[in-house]
Length: 170
Image 1 (cartoon, rainbow, N blue to C red):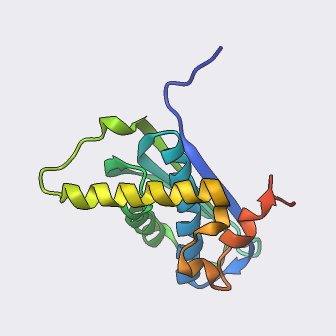
Image 2 (spheres, rainbow, N blue to C red; image 1 turned 90 degrees about the vertical axis):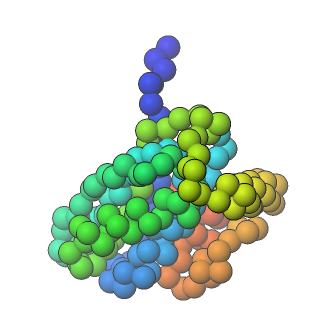
């Protein structure tokens, strides 16, 4: 049996319409990242490399796919999202976006995380505890039981996506 030396966790989505407003794109990207980070925590791993893929509208074609190594491995959206934004704002040419994909790789076991001397360890532990609590609630009551307030905006896709099974209406 083949056992890969490295694992990656990812999610992608073809959007319901072309997104021209970058704040809306950032919202959908954050929702996808929340899903991927949830899966990382379920497997008790942290990732250090982020890979972002953006596909432009059919009318314009093209897109980009870039990766970036983060300063420290993490499975928290709040740590990883700034790197996503850096990639998006650096390589985006302003065309309407139709698909978004995010993948986190270069994984290691969660307990092997290197702590920083200059970081508030108590705050970091509280962030992990909050993420784990939210994960437990979602596992028990469903993915739509706890959402970000921004997931109730019209441009959000999380609530609809959480009702799908294998990408299809249940």
